[in-house]
Each structure stands twice: as C-alpha cells, then as structure tokens.
Image (cartoon, rainbow, N blue to C red; front, side, top):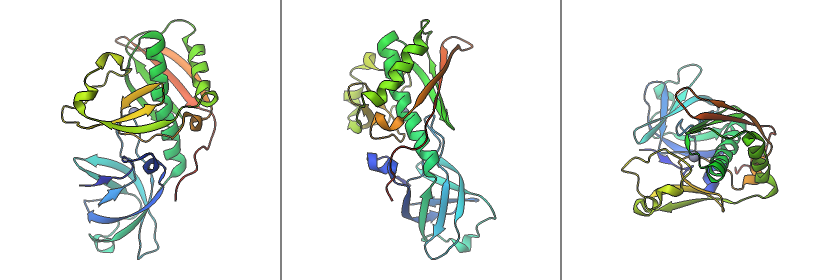
Length: 252
Ligand SMILES: [Zn+2]
C-alpha cells in the first residue's frame, strides 16, 4: 500500500521533493511507501519528475505514474534500472516536475470553480472534466445560452479580482449523500468511499475530489475562454486555457 501523501493537506499539493522507501520493484517501476507523485486519475494527468537513491547520484526519470489497487507505480524511463541497484528498502529522494504539477493544480481548481458557476447560473451540471498541458475541457449535460462564453470569462476573471480560499474538508458519507440536488457534478462516488474528501472553494463550491489544488483562486492566474461546442449524443463542451505562467511558491 502506498500512502498518497499529496492528499492529506493543501501543503501536500505544494510539496515537490520528498523522501520515501522502496517497498516493491515491479518490472519497469518502483513502488514507494509514500509518494507525492500524482497518479493519473479523475481527469488529472500524472506527475513527472525523478527518483534518486539517497546513496547514489543518478536521477532516474519518472515517465508515468499509475495507481494499481492501493499502490502507486512510478514507471521509470531511460536505461532499465537494475533491481540490485535499487533494492527493496532503499531510501529514495523524489522530485516532482513543478511547472507541470502547478498547471494541473491551477486547471483543476479553475474547473471546479467554473463548473460551480455554470451550475449556479444555468442549472447545467458537469459530466466530466479533463486537463492537460495548459488547457482544460468541461463536458456539460446540456447546452449553454448565447453569450455564456463572455459571461464565464467574467466569472474566470473574478477568481483573481475576488479571490476565494480553497480548503480540504472530510465529511462522513451519510452527510455528503444528504443534499444531492445542490451539486454541480454528475459523477457518482463509489459506494465504499467514506469519509468523503471534499474540495471547498469558499462560498462557491464543495465537491468530492482526490486531486491537487491551489490554496486560493488567485493562484489560477490568467484564463482564456476558448469555445463552447455541442457534443455528439447531447451536451456541450467548454474549453479554456491558462494564459499566464507561474503562481504559487512550492515547498521544498
Ligand atoms: Zn476535482
């Protein structure tokens, strides 16, 4: 089992270097007792970065991070890492590609914010969302009226002009299940999830999520609304992108 260290607090999302211990060596990969690398899931791509044995000097690139049951496998690139070079029990220093992680955090928080504003304004819920590079897409259950793109651009700019604090909260499942009509998202929680990890954007949104987020909507920075287009089979897709680089200062 891998402890998902990025989950427990907002600080976890800002941690870009950490130490951990190797607990398994599946072919082409490394499993640690804990990790701050985000594995692909929930519409958020995996982190990239490096691993290095504390006793060594060679940084090994992490080219993919996947969840396998209760463990996280860090797939490593370049020349195969001999098992003997990094045996089970090895102390490892992990380092995360911060520019990539930070973009995913800004895109993820802005997606929650915009999904909530779309639901509040138009009563249209989000089916799914995804992000990659500098761009995010939000797939909606219905159509938005003419002019919605300009209205949502104003909402996006209010993330900076009227910044909201972002927090992690945990609530018992029974409490979360009590008010289904107030939610902007359509994704169902698996039955075994209890307690529920919620991302709260102060006064805007409360949403179950296992992703990494910025501490304030101010850190999202510049956002450009790109398009709203119909989806095959009904619904519509909003595309938007980050227009500025840099934001939060990472923790070492
Ligand atoms: Zn989320």
